[in-house]
Length: 511
Image 1 (cartoon, rainbow, N blue to C red):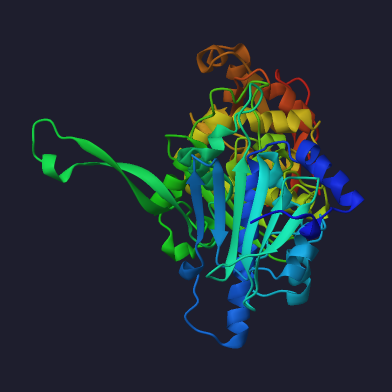
Image 2: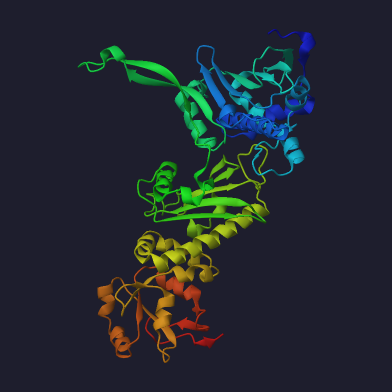
């Protein structure tokens, strides 16, 4: 294919500026390019699949619309090929000749809402992320009408469109990878295991198979059974993505082992989670969430280096690895994923625009986590106490740091050692055992159970047969003072906390 002056087109001035901005500023991580190219391939496959359904054509299925990745190290090319709808010359001009002209968005608007079709692309800039790692990009495409062409560009200088013979309907994106430099390692994008890891990280749940020739090793047949077997390399097509997210599979098809395996792989924790929470909501904000309560804190959990957050997906495509805004600080120990199609993304899809949907999701998740922990306390006390040993301090700080604003949410989750029960009890359990003559919740601060048992104040309270809570952590007393009272809804009464020495107490009030 030759580039002649007659077929060369220039990008519009605003497109040139946007291309330069996008390559140098919009995307903070160059590796995002592969996610964007694969998402575009998925969009094109969705369109063709939908068109086939409209026409009543049979025989076209998701397996037949596989996306393939090919690496050519000698020529330094990385190719992503799909069997989607392809593009005509006019569509190449419209979609690739003008940056931020999104065919996916137009299709999505025209389609309105279909249950089986998810269009990932919104802005029409993702394709140009290829120029972050490529000094030349070729697009070989054949439309459903049978027209085939090639689009070729070396960046902001412009592009060429030429006739091109292509056998099958679909599109090939051929990226000529830049030479590596001291500042940037571009060779990694010609490494099959690096590409495999990027697909697993960002595009694992694209619902078409993503296949690549993978180099593998095997014993040479003629040396099998010998003392010194010889090995040979061979290539084999391998599907690199899971396609169906675990959180979208029917609950009756997913076992505890499946959840635990997913947790281990995603969050690199060898311990099983104490609790699995799966929830989905439709309405003001539509989302699905799969959350996990760890059994132990991470090594840096109680340090300033710890980063909270949930993995955030938009239609199965990873947008953020740790979205901090989805978790309040008092539940920062929670791990998991959230998948939503309602999020307002910025132009690069790397970050969220802080909008109403995000706040709704975060609020709903906070309530869900609290309710699941309360159920765990009630129905699985042993594991709840394990959880509390690991993360109870974070719940207390949640009340203390909010100056009591979160007490209604968190107070039912607190546990304290009981003088009468000789075990950890909740405030609700304490209140339930209070006699009619007792007007206050009593507590004593100390460094250990043994030390508190020896205090003379305990003898006075024992004589009255009052249950006493032992506050063994430095923050405990501050938490109760910030709370000022505890609301026991079942009794419709409000109980104040007695002072550590029983000299003053907050009066009992009727509600």
